[in-house]
Amino acid sequence: MKYHNTVLHQLLNFLPRQRFQAVVDRHNGDHRTRSLSCWDQLVSLLFSQLSGRQSLRDLVDSFNSKNAHHYHLGTRLIRRSSLADANRDRPIAIFQETFFYLLEKVRDRLPKQDATELVRLIDATTIDLNMNQFEWAKFRSSKAGIKLHTVYDPHAEIPVFFEMTNAKVNDRKALSSLPMMPGITYVVDRAYNDYGWYYSLTQQGSKFVGRMKSNAVYEVVETRPAKGAGVLADEEIRLTSNKAKKDCPISLRRITFRRAEDQKLLVFISNDLKCSAAEIASLYKQRWQIELFFKWIKQNLKIKKFLGRSENAVHIQVLTAMISYLLLKLVQLGGFSHLSLQQISRLMSVNLTSRRSIHQLLNPETERKIVAPQMSPQLNFGLSFA
Image (tube, rainbow, N blue to C red):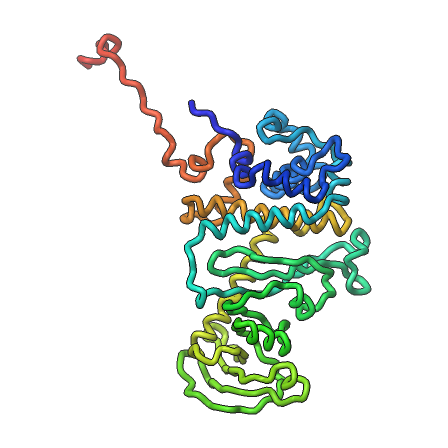
């Protein structure tokens, strides 16, 4: 029988130990560490994410019960106090760089897109926290929480950037920390309506599609034919309020659209003066993909219940959740596009310590079929004349 490392070990092959250790050394992550290295911390947290552990004690007990596999994982028995201290104190930059390293690996496995087709969705999701346990995350008199401000690639179905902030941080204020690249079309909701940001995108050669505020003051420069299903109006406009025209002194597109599924009226704003109104409406429709992503990670990864109460511990847990997502995506891109990430995640969660190839796990029909041995004529003689 062919020998296989555990499924978790095969997942970790996407992240070479030497490469990870170089990041750790750069940030002095293992300085004065005796019982729990950064690698021990990462592997145990990934184990927690992918197997659905519910608490720090649950994680430590479950991980230590698999000690027969620790040697091949490059880990050792962990103590609850050591892991809690590491989550509180270790540099989050180690996990951020690991996320971006795996992100590049995912991108390398994707088919190349024409620059004119690149679309990024921007949105944020709020995760509620217990105010008594997470005082640093308080944002109202009786509420606490964090926000994940995310830039999402709908073609690759991956987050390409995210930032964790206190839930009180306004979505528009978070825009300044999100990386913007020339040639990309950014799709945003009404919460990100910022004319200065729209203008800076235009100046750098990017496009945007957003929702226009109902109280926006403008003049119509040109009225175009309303072509396309659901398109009620297609106008070229200029903003006329003193602040808006100073922040964004360019012509913009205003498109009035009625959504077929619920007859809701939507008014889009864009700096794209060439695409059809229907194409711009179609771009905005892609926003539902980032909503599905937020729903998926909340249902399948551990970002609603946290192993530590400090801001650093929460941040590291969110990062390891995103790292887990990219690892699952790398598996999917390795020849399993016929399976959803949910299917892959479920199969992985119950087989993390199984010594079985991922290929056999996800394609069970490829395993060698057991053929019943044929009986020799000498042993079969009693049946030959039945």
